[in-house]
Image (cartoon, rainbow, N blue to C red; front, side, top):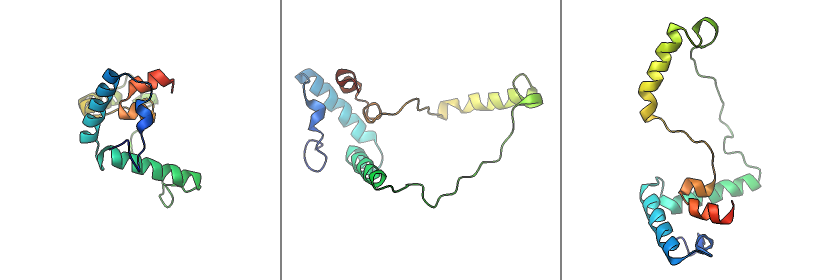
Length: 122
């Protein structure tokens, strides 16, 4: 599906062995089944739309107003070592299993295609 119009992702399989292709196809199939918003097709459509908008100078956040949420200042007397800080740290630890961290972004890393990334020095 991703090799034909309008997606044209056949470059993913250039210069890879049959074994690597099969592994990538399995990864892509797993990702496609789990990725919300239309699977990989939806992901590529949204990405291309965002890239086109960026080329045209469109801001996807136009009309949105950022605001600083209410919260606690955890510094000084309520900083590290204080009872207040320890309470918030404990609360954070309890929520950690529901938390995700994104340390870097690349389209290949997001799709879980590390072999391609390694082979092509992206």
